[in-house]
Image (cartoon, rainbow, N blue to C red):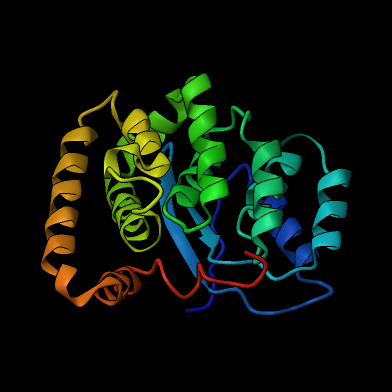
Length: 225
């Protein structure tokens, strides 16, 4: 499905200008990514952006204010994992509420170095904006948690013996702890564990098939980590 951009009204002109500039030199069509609500307004992000890293960095360096933060948000959807991490490290301390979904989305993806950056930041800083976003988007949070469980089961069981020690889960727990969404999260986690146990005999393939159906595999696994 082709990407249909949508941002809060105050950001829409800036977002469209950035997206146009990012795809000017490499007009590869983006696929639809996540759709969420931020303070009552729709935000729709691309699954991946395919502009060159140098063009993206130039746009980020030239932008200021909301445009700068928004360029970093879009940079977290870049096809190259190292570029995503680079943008995340600059974005992590922002107080813009519309940055929250871009951070949370990364917890449901497969690059553990990126997940650990977010988990470390959440341990050190307030997560109020993230918690507000989570309460407004329970379905998105549940899907993100399910994807994190799938990646833990397939790739990180050896490193994190318990699901509760996997950084994506500890981060999601911290985000959701402040509100009633935590009840739904626990139910989703238990359901995910039951599915993993049921598919254990089939090995990791069953897990990945389940993750692929939820949209976490395929568009996430790309070149450059």
